[in-house]
Image (cartoon, rainbow, N blue to C red; front, side, top):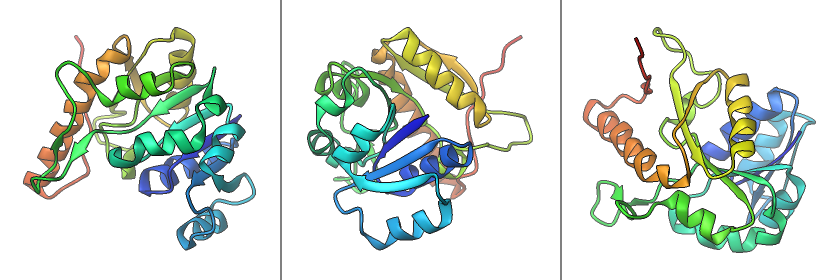
Length: 213
């Protein structure tokens, strides 16, 4: 499968490398594909990976991953070209974090979410929220003493969610689907809980697990 990753930060590079290790072809997209961290990433990840602009990565992927800081998300989507993502599954990893007061908070919430905004900006894409409530160090093949953690996902398209569930399961996740993209209103605050616990304890090796009886 061809996967286009929009964003060359830690999250984009970790997910891109994880997908490439499974045999997928991955193109990572950015404003500057020639930057040093991208060149270094290509050397480490091997022949299944390549780099391009946002538009090139969006057009390349059968599936796309949106891994951009919230402040640059709308512009990155414009650069990628909504037409290049039309009809495709887009995994939205973003969190609408606002750092203006120092400690992060949510810039969007209660009656809207980043996931819903991404879906409105890309009305012809099949947006699925995932990966937003765990640190990048544990996004691929998470190893915890209590077994696989839970990845909560949401999105409007059932077929798209099945594809994302399949990808998540191949990289070690137990998955629970919580409904339409408006479920992002709950998953993005869940990311804040993850961040708050990490900040208070100065540890980042944690994830959520739903226990059932």
